[in-house]
Length: 407
Image 1 (tube, rainbow, N blue to C red):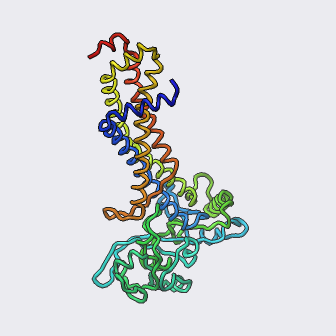
Image 2 (cartoon, rainbow, N blue to C red):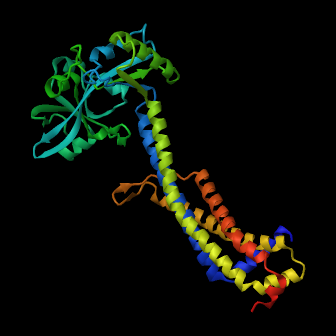
Image 3 (tube, rainbow, N blue to C red):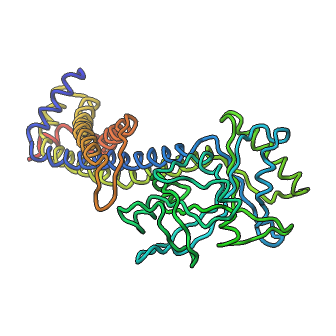
């Protein structure tokens, strides 16, 4: 038989039992819609977080101390950061910003919160692409004089002061009184932490007033040195330059007492993790596709039983084994593919409706892409083909005489 005859016959057979066909379609529709909508949510979350990290700058290197087993892991100092601006040893580095991190209770009037406190230098603002929404950032003078001033993340500012302007107000950090000089623009949460939940203070204030830790050589220790590279294409060269400079300064002969990571590595790791998460969500939703496929096989088995005499008549009139097989396989495939198309449309509509909406306190960002839709449709068609083969083979193997005798 020609493909046109096979398809028209399949459509006529499916149309003869509209309710049963509709129920079979429903399982595939729900499965495909679930796969597309869940994977769109996962893909959207991946894009949002990646954009937030990229907004911090892609030409960044992070140098952190490594515990080598010889005492504490405090091996990096403020002097190390300044030495990495050497135009001879590290010409690829254009700016550096060390940081000292601790945590503490922030109290303002009757309000209080627990936050991360980061000691920084003025260069931190440009290196990490921070922006001040009101007031000003940390200044060189405040670092030199160890002023007790603070720049609040937007979340901390809202928690402590509500809709009031915090600039000029006072608060207490770990029992010490600080004056608020600025509020940062909202950055949101990233793989690097909740940037809106930080409080920035001068690095010297953080060290001498809030947390002090010295290296084995007696220097002022820092938890990280943020480095800005002149060109993203020079990242590998910059890593080599920084590693060589620190090995010379620390007189390292074997194992490094520091680690160097890049923003690009962070983004790549996050992307891989998010893709795995999205596929995991899709696999869970795909279980409903499997259930839909079993429903198709069940309905096709019933159809074979009901049409046993029809099969016998067609075989007696010269229909070949291949013709019967193709007939029932095409019906199963049309069922799954038709349900897949309707489910794809429904999934795309659901994804569009969820995009940017807050559901159960969670703001959803979705991203529908062609590969997700094609994947869902392909899986739906494959499931219909797989689960339709057994009923089709059973119909094709019926003996024409026994089929004609069937009541």
